[in-house]
Image (cartoon, rainbow, N blue to C red; front, side, top):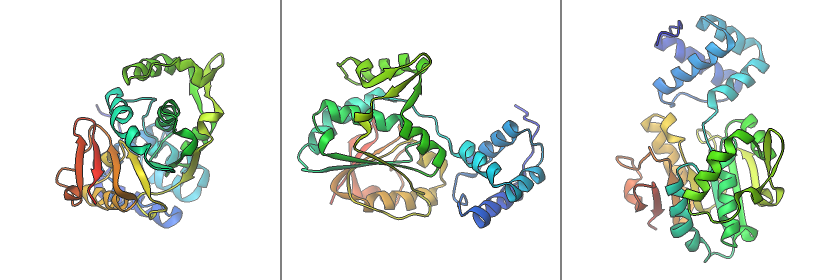
Length: 275
């Protein structure tokens, strides 16, 4: 489809440089094709036709950059997305986590929090939520603010309820939220053990050790060099025999760290650190 916006490779390089020098965010190792598509999407939404216009607004308007970052980095997510993955968590991983006196889980790239809410529900149903701390991080502060509020459009709940049931859930799903005319609010007690915090997988380091890290549908936006660096960070952030969950279209195949993990369930992309 012709979107009417032509971007040359050196123009993308210039935009990445502007963002890095002026705001400290580094997109140099993001997948160039994916990054270019997202920049075009931002320009379309802002009504910008040329890279000159985009560069001008980025340099001169911090508020525009905040919007640009929010639009550029927003990830599609949903509650109990990929129900077969959550069924595997429920049946295979969560029972193993029960052996730890304190359970620490990291949702890296948590977007607007829907998968964090799902994890809290799994842990509550397993009787483990009270001794769990979930660290939910994202590069995008607007995402985190939305995640903290626990607000979900009402029209999404039919699909989320179906996902929950397919994941093996047997409780009344509506008991996990408060319904309003056009939205629902996740019950606060589900989020009491969640710490929402900004973290940049590209530039920030490990900050704790975890028994389970979920980093789903994040690596697909990075080039292979950055994928390897992030996977090393995740490996270093896991305890021995800790679990790593990736997105359904992501893999450890051909990654530098591949030999350090064993596959728990290949189709669900759940791996365990060997040592």
